[in-house]
Amino acid sequence: MNNNNKRRIMNNLKKLGVTALAGSLAAVSAQAGEMSMNGSANFTYYTTSKSEGKGLGTDKGLTVSGSGELDNGWTFSIYTYFSDGIDISSHATSLTMGSLGTITMGQAFGGNSGSYDEEVPQAYEQTSDRQQNSANQVGNWMDNGGLTWTPPAFDISGLGSVQAHVGFSPEANDVATNNGSVGAKPGGTYWGTGTDLGLTLTTDMGLTLGAYGAQREQESPLNADGDEFNGSWYAKYTMGSVSVGYSEAYYDSGSSGTATAATTAKTIGTSAGVFENQQMSIAFNVNDNLSISYTESEDTYNAQASTTSTQTVADVTQETEALQAAYSMGGMTIKAFSMEASNPGWDSNATKNSFSEISIGLSF
Image 1 (cartoon, rainbow, N blue to C red):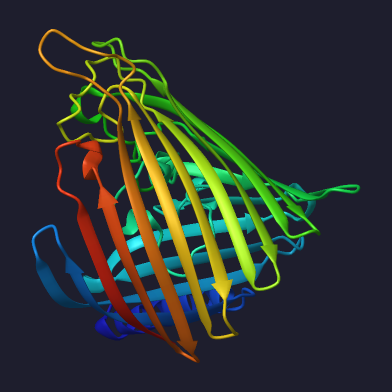
Image 2 (cartoon, rainbow, N blue to C red):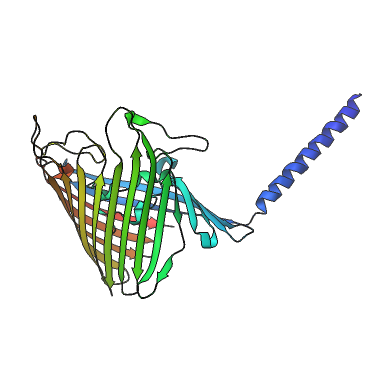
C-alpha cells in the first residue's frame, strides 16, 4: 500500500472518530436538565472565655446543583457543596418517583436525623455549634454510605399531615465511601447494619410534633458491647410572630465499659453510660427582617452506676444557655449569639465557658 492510500485511510478514520464523538456529545447535551450555582461568604468576630481568645474569621462556600426529568415523569436533583480550600463538604443525589416518594444518597448530607435533632426554634446557631451536646449526635452516623426514603405525606382527618423518613445503611460506621468501595473497620469497632425512622405531624393549628429513632448493630468480635440506639422527639408551636419549642433526646452507644468519673470529660459515643438531653426555646419575629430567640439546653450524662473500685461515678449535667438574634437586608444577614455553658464536657470540675459571636453573611 502506497503512502497516498495510507494517508486517505487515516483521514477517513479521523473523520469517523470526530463524527462519532460529536454524536455522543450531542446525545448527552440533549438530555433535559439544568444546572445552577450559588454561594456565600461569612465574616465573624468571635470571643471565648475558654482561652480568653478573640478572633476575626471568614469562610466561604459554593454549591453546584442540577435537576432534570426522566421520560416517565420522575425527576432527579443533585448538589455538591464546596467549602474553603475547594474541599467537598457534602453532596447528595435525589430521585423523586411520583407516588413512590423520594430516595436520596450522598455523603455528609445530614440524613434523616437533621430533621429531628435540636429541633427547637432559634434565630441563629444551635447551641451545639459551640458547646457539643448529645442531641446533635443522634443518628448522625446514617448520612455516609446510606440512603434515605421519604414517602409521600398523608393526611389524617382532623389532625393534619404526617411525613415519614426512613433510612438504611449496610455498614453504619459513618465512613464516606466512593463507588465500588466499602467502609473501613476502624479501631476494632465494627458497626453493622443501621436503620432509622422519623415521623413528623404538622397540624393546621400551628403545632408540629416529631419523633425519631436510630439503631445500628455492633459486630465487634472481641468485646461485649451491645447495639447502639439513639432517639429524640420534639414539639413546636407557632402563634403569630412567637414560636416555642421543647425537645428531648437519648443517646446510648451500647458500650459495656466502666462509667467515666464525674470529674473527667466525657466523649459521646465512647463513654459508657447514656446521655439525655432536654432543650426548650422561644423565638420572636420582631418584623420581617429581625428575629430574636432564647434557648436552654440540659444535657445529662447518666453514669448508670454509683461507684467503682478506683473512682467516684455520678451523673453530671451540662447546662447551656444562649441568646440569639438575626437581621436580614436583602443578600446580607447580620447574626449574633451569646452563650454560656456550665460543666462543659460533662466534667463537674470544668470551668464555666462563655462564647459570643457576631457574623456578617453575604449570599449570591
